[in-house]
Length: 202
Image (cartoon, rainbow, N blue to C red; front, side, top):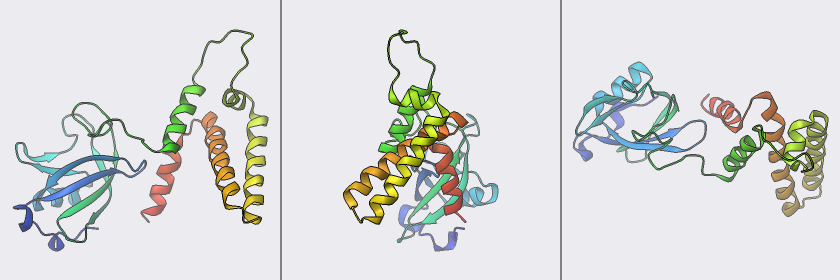
């Protein structure tokens, strides 16, 4: 997985920089440091260990329960930094936020998934207020699946016609309808990303 002998600990006075990334969402969770002992513990236990200048050897989540299970460890081209792709058990930041850089899920697809989660939540509305398109899809299984099929067919047609602009539009429609279709099954974008992450690590 990771060859410790290939890392350049000397450059950082015994430490290498560790960029920790959520393997499912792609969010950068935190940036920390590790020495040879911390990375050896990480490899031995399958959970992230770091070396803090103030705390010493540090097993992430040992106190909070927010452990980080290792999916993959990769050294950078200079051997003085490591990318740690992990599955997290809770927030990465000591402040309680999802990442040390604030809320995670900054990409447009994740923002869409968050919106769908809000639309899927029970909501009170006046009897004469029409439901939103998303709400109609979520409440009507046949309509939801019919629209998914229609949008997929439109994407196929755009690709067959080599119409790049239309294909991009139709692909966006398909992604939207896919996320709507799986939401009533209790699935979200994170579940789909987790499958892709597992496949990518094989």
